[in-house]
Length: 310
Image 1 (spheres, rainbow, N blue to C red):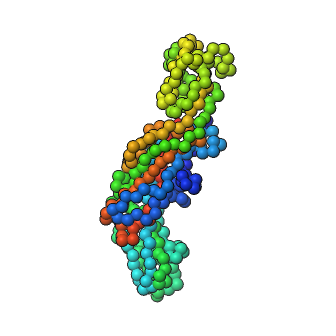
Image 2 (tube, helix red, strand yellow):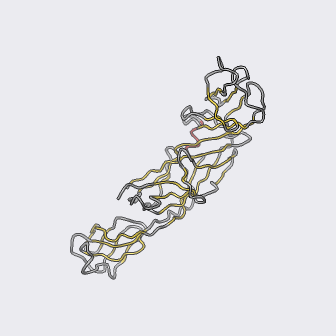
Image 3 (tube, rainbow, N blue to C red):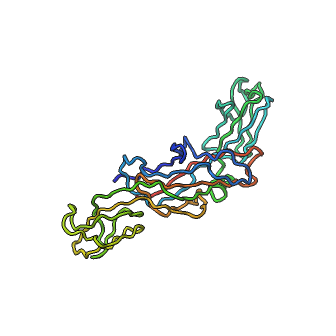
């Protein structure tokens, strides 16, 4: 089998999210507010099955980036300035400033800048965004919408969104697709017990034989299986060294009762593996510190990193 293909999708639209180009969007979050993401996230492995993906094991989630967006309105005055709601601001990746949807360019200062140039200066320590005076650098038109998007600085206060103060998740429920293993060479534990590769959740064991053609004695008849561990108790002892098994399996819900914090250095380890064409249903929550926001609130987007083995 090929490596797992792990992707995130919105539960309502099925659009892929959590990428640099389409991060998970919490919308506007105000100071001191705890807000649930308005849609669930489906963590899929090989959604359409085209990759013939292996099971993803030891799954864990971590916040890769948090992008904060502030909205301001121009009053049309010269040299007007605005302040980012979370400071200091990271210099990389670079902030983005849009005026009525058009991206403006950062300069170190306004010296030698023409009056028509759509530029701004930005102080990463204080989070101060400043526009020109109409002589050196253009003035955003009165009532223009100004959008500042940035990443908080990880080294000081901005570290908070990546760790325990802001983002948490809860894995609850699965989107299941039952898969059939027609014949698999399993591991023999002893003459009455074998271990299969894909688990949990085993839904059915058809049989266990001593050959890949599945002829002769079905050693499973009268036996039982553990859906979580992949252990199969045989109904008839088998002395042959190699068992061959036909069985069915699917994803098992982590069924988490509460939210777990995640971020850089705070990964959220999920309990159960994820087979191809199956998904985990995950809820996300954000808690904004009381001193993290201006009166207008923050629009917050999150890019996740998913860890796994196979």
